[in-house]
Every structure is written in structure tokens, then in C-alpha cells.
Length: 244
Length: 301
Image (cartoon, rainbow over all chains, first blue to last red; front, side, top):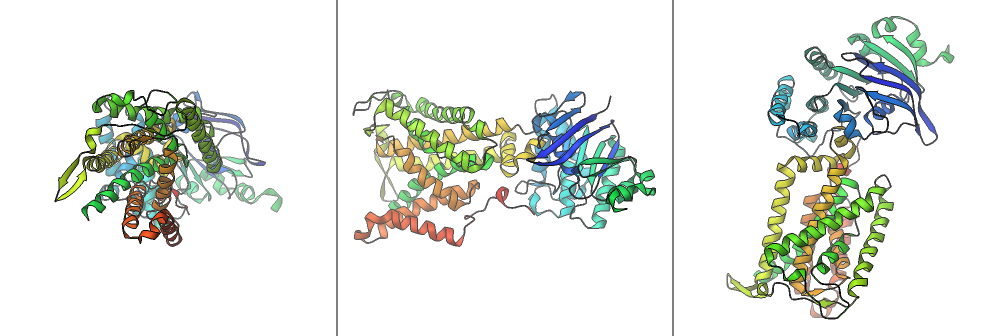
């Protein structure tokens, strides 16, 4: 059974249809890139899965539960962890407090305190610079550091699937490389399932994995990133068939 | 001189606690709760037995202080949470202006409910009379009550700070105040945080009610509105949503009122409030974002 399944999902903002009848599914351990030009509906799709944007039609299932129309906090409890566009660190909280917000929802579980401490150490081991700044205000971290913080924060929720919306946004290319390097190391280490939204498909082709290309609120291509990248179909799909 | 300082601090305490009650709720749901003043009035009347006589029949107010204080705090928290569940929950997705108007309406409902039970005549109550005795500190004679007001306010502020900084629930509230939907995506329960904010705000209303009744010795259904206005101004000057700002501005307003009362020429004193509000306008002209701007409400790039 797939971990995440969308069937015929439609999202509307009043009269504008942002996403129309999108269906796809993801298996545990998979890495999936959703790419496409601005306004293709990629972010709307992620926000709908997270439960912060309502869907106008269709159905979303996560880990065997229907989550269409569920509250974001309940979807998070099923193991969906979102890293939104623009990162959304809690700027007035310290770095460590940001990480702890993510762990809070499991507080009723047995052994939560020691598990949270272990998890915190694990995140600090992956991102040592977060440990250095652990008592500093998160709002004062640089863009790259904030990106690492929100990835760490997502890890603290003990997720089954991490969705990241445009991790490259506003980052220098070398910082962006670092972010991806850590992300891929984490993925290998923990068998993370990753759903990554990027405007450009270059990164997907570099990293590999599955890629879905969206345009005008619909899926136009779905396949292996490297195979798709070598074909001409991708350029046609990206810029639109009518341009040819 | 010491007398002026204590007057300023004890008046500022009332405004600061009131402003805090408004800022707490604004922080988590962008609601300016104008019903807050009427929750304060409700707490005052909770001390009395319902009657429309001019003489107050003190009922719960006769409890010993260690029962009286929790009782009034619980009344405030209870009514405040009830308001959230019955009214504000329906407006959560509405825009802030709609919510604000709903809070006005709710405030009137509470006020007229009290009017029905108690009539509109102010009543005198003598709450904890032993507190009005003066004490001598550094050669100045101060009412014991003023001292207790200031100490109690400091304890409340300290307790609240520890709560927000050191507990998991406090952490969730701070996260939610800054970015509500992100907090929810991390599993923070919206209802829990909002009800918690209402409960805290209501308990603060209870504390204000106690202090106010003990100071003035009267119960008046209009009294909540008067404190509410000052408290609201303090939250705006402090920077809407900033808790520290609300407290700071509350004390500043208290100080400004007391200092003007003393410094203004005798003829101008009846117009003291006009001067206070004039100063408020000046502050807002120079710092429209408030003294301490809340990070959560800043625009994001």
C-alpha cells in the first residue's frame, strides 16, 4: 500500500482553479520531486496535503487514513511533516525551542523525554552549527542555517514523510548544495520518504529519483528524473506544447 | 515622591494586566477582544448575590481570601473559555474586523445580563477591609492594598513569564502566536492553544476584578469598559501582540496618568485624560508599530 495517495485532487481559490484532478501516489522510502513553472499549483498541492489549504474535490490518503479536510495538527500526527516555502522559522524563539515545538505532539508517549533528548542530539550531530546557536534567536540565523533548522525541526516530529517546498528559494548555490548534501545523507541514514517541490528540474536530475512535472494545475509528466531529463519531452512540457 | 511612584505602579498594574489579557488573545488569533472588560465586570459581580437593591448582598465575596482568589480567577477563566467555545470558535476563519465586532456584541450581552440581575446602580462592597490600613515604608504612609496590588502584579507577571518560557504549553503558545498555521503543521493543537489563551486572559480579568473592587469598593456594570479602553490603548502602544510591550505600555500609561494628575496646574487637572490621550497620539505618530513590535505580525518577504 502506498504511503501517500492523491486521487483527482482539485484546489480552487474562489474562482481560480489552482490544481485540477491531480492523482499520484508515493511509496515508503521514495524520493519524489514535483517541479514546474511558477503558478503550476505545486505549493497549493503541498499545502492541501498538509491540511492548511482546503481541497475542492478529490481525496487524499496518508498511511492508510483518509486525511481530506482533516486539521493540520492531526495530519502531522500521522507522520506528515511540512517544511513550507520561506521556511517559517519561529523567529522570536531560540533555535532549540524551534526544534522542541516539533517534538511536542508526542509528549504523551512513553519515554518521550529521553527520546526527545536523543533526537535533539541526532539533529545537532547532523547540523553542528545549530548546536552552536542553540540558545540564540532563530530569527537571527542566516537563510541557509534557517533552512537546516526547519529540516531539523521536521525531523523532530518523527515523520514518515517530509515535504519540502522550494528549499533552494533565496539561498546561494553553494549553500543550496550543502542543504541537499545533508538531506541526502539523512535520507540514506533514516530511509526518509521525501517529497520536494522545486521550480527547476535541474536538481531532480542531479539527485535522481522520481519526478512529476506540473503545469497549469495538472501533471504533464511523471517518471524517472534522469530519463525525463534527457528527453525533449521535458522542455516541451515545461514551456507548453503550444509554443512549438 | 514615593507616594507618586506607588500610585503610578498600582494604577499601571491594572492597565498592564488588562493589556496582557488582550494581547494574549490577539497573539494567537488576531482578535481584539472587546468583551474582555465585561468579563472583568462579570468577575466583580460574581462576588455578589443577584439583587437589584442598592445595597450589595455580598455572597462569594465573604469567602476567606485563599478561597476567594481561586474562585474569582476560575470565574474569569470559565466565562472566557465559554465565550471562545460558544462564540469565537465560529469566527475563527473570519477576518479580524468581523471578530472584533462579534466581541463588541458579546460584551454587550454580558453587560446586559449583569444589568438584568443587578440593575445599573453602582453598589458598594467592602472587600477585604483589613487591606485598606496604611503601612509605613521609608517614612511614607502607603495603603497596604497598594503594596499588595504591586506585589501581586509582579508575581503574576513573573509566573506568566516562567509559564511561557519554561513549559511545553507555553512554548506552543509562543510558537502559535508567531505563526499559527506553521505551529499546527508541527502538531500544535489549535483548540488547546486558543482555549489556553482565553483561560489565561480570563484569569487575568479575575485578578483585575479583585484588585479593582478592593481599591474602589464599588461594583458597577460599566467599570469593565473603562479599564478595557485604557488596556486596549496600552496594547496598541505596546505593539499589538507583543506581551512585553503591552505590560510596558500599561505601566507607562499608569505613570502618565498619575504624573499628570500631580504636575498639571490645578485648572487643567479635570482635563487630565485629554492630556493622556494626547500623549498616546504623539507616541503613535512617532512609533505607529508600537513600542515593541511583535515579530509575528511583521510582514514576511
